[in-house]
Image 1 (cartoon, rainbow over the protein chains, first blue to last red):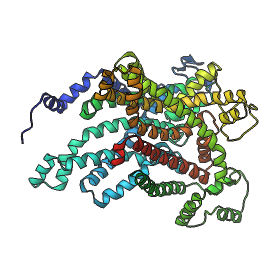
Image 2 (image 1 turned 30 degrees about the vertical axis):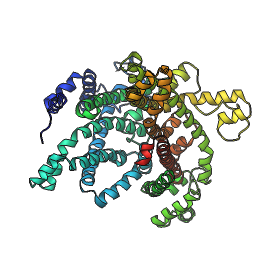
Image 3 (image 1 turned 180 degrees about the vertical axis):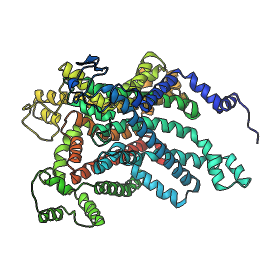
Image 4 (image 1 turned 90 degrees about the horizontal axis):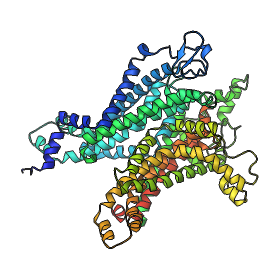
Length: 299
Length: 338
């Protein structure tokens, strides 16, 4: 059984090596810029304690609702202004990056691992497990994502652990479906039959043969899910049932500024702009990754 | 064939709805805070006896599984119990009062999204990588990346506060309308021939409608664009052109009709997400609908009310998807056979 070698085939093989993929990704200028912005937010969040001009929770009574660039009495200067309690917006936005990114990564990793694991088992073994899982998945799919998270958070109140679980509770379904479908197809593929014929064990086939082949679409999905999770977390925080109010978070900050939109537009505007910029960059980077990693979707 | 498809899908609905109702029921009972304590928060000194009495009155003293059984049995008959935060009125009544407001706004947002997305997607597909296509692609990306609550606030600042073009809260100007038939204000205004009330109600929906429609418009536009590009490359389109049909006919009738079939799924899915947008956008604009009702009920630990609204949203979502599947099966015989 010899594969005819076509030009397409050669190209695919070249792109399938890690350096090849990296070259393709680096050639996509938009994705590179987006990746740099995401990295910038990550660094800003990680180094926030060292970088912030002020303690994000410190209240400066002389600077209540100070406008951007305003020089308050004394030497205090608030680059992006201050909120209704006189807290520095820039410092709070920098700290807010921590929460958004940390929660996003935590939720995506959790859903990726759980969804992929369950999906691989269901796809490989089929049987009653697959049947039960498909019922569970149908039920979860019946819930609009945000309303589901809202129902859970309504019960528990603002709390980080509950927030991760609420956002993850339905999120794993997407990974499950991709993993299950890909394993189902891979099961009958020649390389799996060959491995089985050579006497490879079931875990070996699942993790060493099949898993590496289904990882690329899962990575793409994980990146794009990250964008959704960041918006969902911010939305719940905006409603007051996401991140606890003591931790600076972008959604909470927009909610704080809502009452002052008529007199101090900057309080609600800047944190929202941060969400938009981060989510946009994550989306652009994810689409760049998809073009490289998922040849089926390549334009 | 058609009948069997419909029956099968309807039967599949039952376990899904049971699962949905169980999850909703369970989440509301995982809560650490006690609704009775919450209710009595501002009522001053109350004896333990009175607390127990209230607990029995609202059925909170029975075993969990029994409470679920009662919940489902009652829900099927439209009885969702009594609301803790609305002076003990029936939840079903409180929900019914707010339903028209949300229905009206959601339909309005749906229309904005569709009326914007389909033409934009079609125009973009006619010249891929052209100027319009590039602008639309960037716009769509912004649409899916922008947080709805923030878009709402920005629209509010720009068009309601800096320029007093549009109202930023409520459903209608005070005293603009006196006759109510359906609770859908625009429709009521038309029925009573009150043009001023009609404009007022419409104007109140513009900003929340746009904020709610943005992500849906973006997703639908992308889908219309990509499926139109696919369809326009097909042989039968070449054939229609070769026959000498005018381009508007080729694009508008032959291509669009086929491109819309795969779009239906996205439309149904996005309409479901439009519903979750309700909660956030209604809160931003103080729009007195179901979404705001739910968010307020969460604040008041009014579980029966939260349960009823969440369940209503989930059921609408399920039915929307079922409707889309049915419509798709009607338009595309290949789906029916599968």
